[in-house]
Length: 280
Image 1 (cartoon, rainbow, N blue to C red):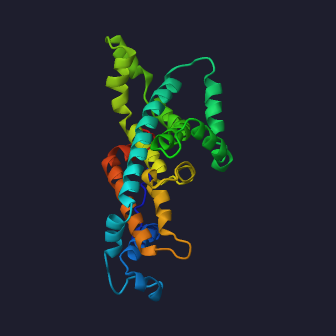
Image 2 (cartoon, rainbow, N blue to C red; image 1 turned 180 degrees about the horizontal axis):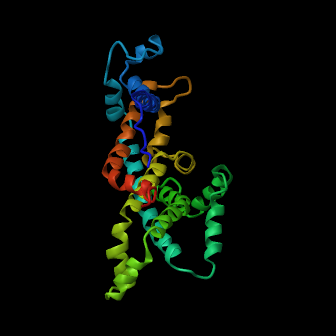
Image 3 (cartoon, rainbow, N blue to C red; image 1 turned 135 degrees about the horizontal axis):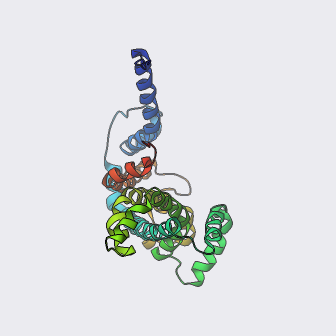
């Protein structure tokens, strides 16, 4: 029986070089964001495209934190993103379990309708959404953003959770029910612990989508008290100029919650995204 030959050193070196170039390419925009954030305003244009500024300053960060409403925008985005991620994941987990485990009348119709909702561009439905939110008296409120984000993310999150439930054998919960568990107890004690990677992946996706969403936040919110940070970044753009240093500093600060969130759920997220990739 022939054995597989080991890769040559040249091939291994080339693979890691290609991977390194890809990583640099992917991270370069983040580096440029941080570079402009710590560059003094007078040097942003005079030094052009220099990779490293001749002088560094944290004045932009100080100004953003102490002299703008960025912290309020930051807090609003956290409330909206965490609320949306939590509510959407709970609803999607319940719906995904139902689609995975039960056959009921109208199941295919419900799935088809959920798929159809993903076909319409947001620009087509922003006006009806605005009228509905206005009629409910929810304009300029974080509640309106949580409701809208939840509604638009539930279909994808439901299908994502259904795929994870489909990967868990039904025999496990049936065995638990034979041993005396109710269906709910089997779900809570047996199925949900096995679905933690899926819950982590869903939470991560929904949190990121809500954290960076701009269109609905721009249309439904027009007061400084309830602005989220994507809309708040536009306040650094005036009629005749753009404060690039402060905008980039705010962008760097806005990355912190996403990074911390993904560090917290990294183990579950990686397991969820790779679940089912290798069988054997």
